[in-house]
Image 1 (cartoon, rainbow, N blue to C red):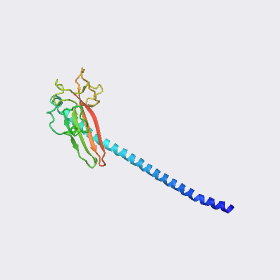
Image 2: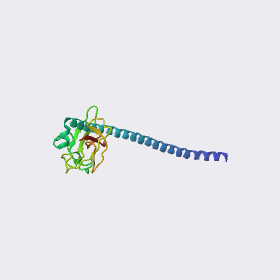
Image 3: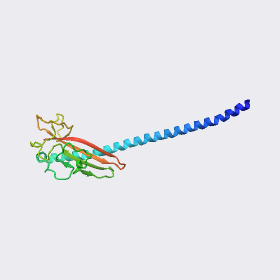
Image 4: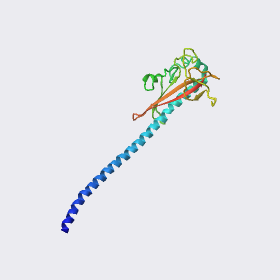
Length: 203
């Protein structure tokens, strides 16, 4: 009887060990997939971050253009904005406030920054003056987003700020005209990033 019980115990141990091996194998595969998913997720986040930072180059280029243009002839720029630039340079003197950045017409007259050795992405930027019509900002038939001057201004003709619509405003000084700068970038792996900023120019 003792020999019979021992043989039965040996027979049970084999399937138990096989089950344990299967469980360990499945657990290993799950852990490997989880590790790969975490690595891929972290890589995608880093990739998206690099695209967002690269797109900021387009915002900076548009901002610098507005700085140079406002210093060169701000009076002409504000009085007859649609004629003071012509075509190119990513500039549009009006914006309807409705067209989204996903629409192709939003990017009319956009400027392209081609890839370089230091910057491998293709970047586009476009500037929209926050006015309904491409005429003088203070024309009675026009409607532009304007705000009061920022008391913390550093003296630069162009300052960063947030757009605030004012329909019937009274200003203690010359109002600030709003310009929306939008940049987009297409990554080599199908990534797509759009960044925006608002620049203010004293009238």
